[in-house]
Length: 254
Image (cartoon, rainbow, N blue to C red):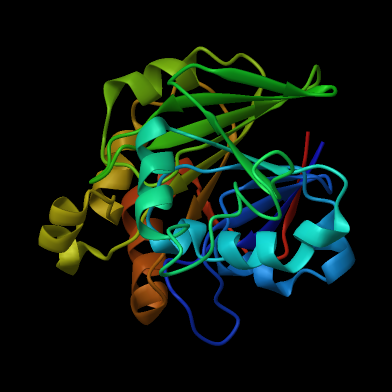
């Protein structure tokens, strides 16, 4: 399994793309603006999209993805998400006001997109790969994901505030190779981080003390306006764990 980082920023700007990961060539984890850098033939190979939650920076490219390649595909794109996320997409995006409902186009018996509900601890297998949904704690219902093969595992926290259940799952994964964890705001913005239920560097350092495995720790979702400051604060407050910043274009192999 190869995981290609299409986007890992908490906002947009030059070279900044919001959250999305391409697994091999047929699975997306989140559908942020990073998806928009793929060629049409690459987009057409995507069969499954797994969404952590309904916020725009994680779903922005999904409507355009389906619109761009639906007619090129023999089967619908399957969107896996919490029922609350699916309801939000139906009500606010695929509602014939903001965007057409592609679960009915070109015909409800032959749609370009279908929704498949997830619950916490669901496991979806796609060939030799598996995606397990794990608990997250955000301002809307949200998930993280545990990706694994027979060889190794990767955990992506999604957007999350501290939750004991997350660390229980992470510490139970014996073959954990990568931990991708968010830290969106700087320490000076910790009040905003608390309101928005995102981590900040002091808190990241505190949370990593719960880690009982030895994965490579990669930090994602930094706000681009404060990226350099957040990076320095991560080094100061979580340096002994030696986390690195996740980079767009990076490829992680399992």
